[in-house]
Image (cartoon, rainbow, N blue to C red; front, side, top):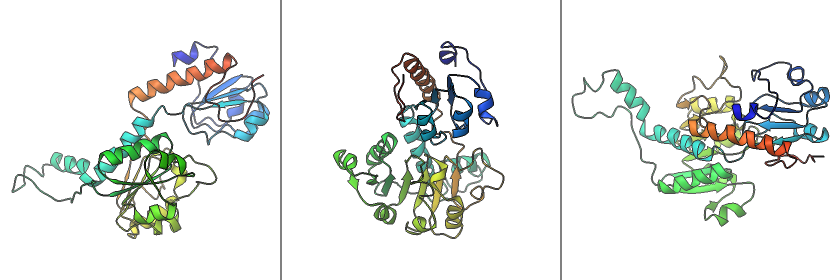
Length: 304
């Protein structure tokens, strides 16, 4: 974190702090990841004119309140594109190849006691020829679509607008058609009021009974109760998730015990190279704002 600390007087706090406004105080800038920066924070901290995010998503910041307060909000786009796409396929390949389950079986001694050179306790499948439905066509969605083609999957894409999809040479379809045709549905959207609970009882029911739902974006895109029910009753075939609505996972999370559900602890963004890149870009954002030339601004605030 020295790249940030060298830019001025710096104090660090836990990201689950309760009274954020009291901690910010009369600071000019605040840098956060998941910490909620609400309208109350801006009201109580009139000096606060910069919010730097350790993330691409900015749903934890009240953007309208920031703009009214004249505060610039800057995110870090595209720092984790390859890492998240990689993790998406790590989950997908494990779903169909069952690599982790077979490795654990070998550790338990099952191969030692096998009657033949190989055993097939858990069925595996090729992903070649499967239909991959990519929901959202930002940097990560596009990279996942490209990897899908490399694995010779049939790629369908739904995005808020179709131009980027068709210009990139991919097949654009409406959301409902994607759900009906895809063997794998993978979510790569920001979380906002329009996308909250996008995957709900109604949309899940449109998927194939054998289909797999994947989410390495934001937990709030999925109605978790509806997904647990869909998994446990065979409405869909499986789910692979790296994100949940409440993180860390809560003891009463209905997905922890849901059938055919693989969950990793929000690590898609976390390879060492990715984290180093993130810190460097957060520091660059702060330096640019301090010089009066902010970059990666996600709101309409004007720097005086």
